[in-house]
Length: 179
Image (cartoon, rainbow, N blue to C red):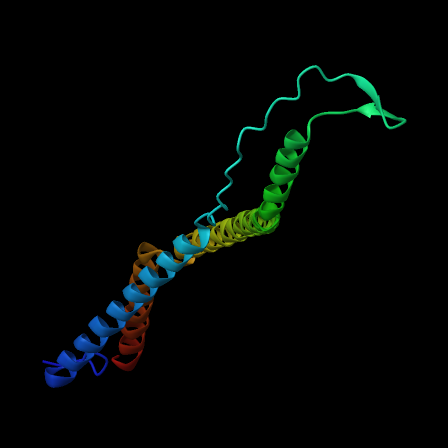
């Protein structure tokens, strides 16, 4: 019984098996850690708490003149409330920037995916051409095997003819030797 040198035996087989188990375990843990970090990275950042108190309405707004200045005038509490809202909305600027960066990254990722699809289609086309060439070569090889000069019947007939010719030549040669 011959054992292949590539197949581990005895203690080597056990050590190789444990090395494989360890490698697979490390690979699975790496994938899980990567997946969890990607999931955490894709979570939305928390928005700042905006407590927008209802501003008192500015009722009856119409053009007025105050100290010689013509314009729309409303009470001071309403103006302070509107200014507070605008100040709090400024805290959203970093979040908006993050969303813009995310959109840019999504666009880049979509472009990469489109490129992957194009490359996959190109590879499929190349593989298809290689398969067609292999099938064509296989057909040619099969046709070469079926060629007339490879027929077993032909070589049997040639053998029979050569044997008959040799026998006739031997009979003629023997008949000339014996008077």
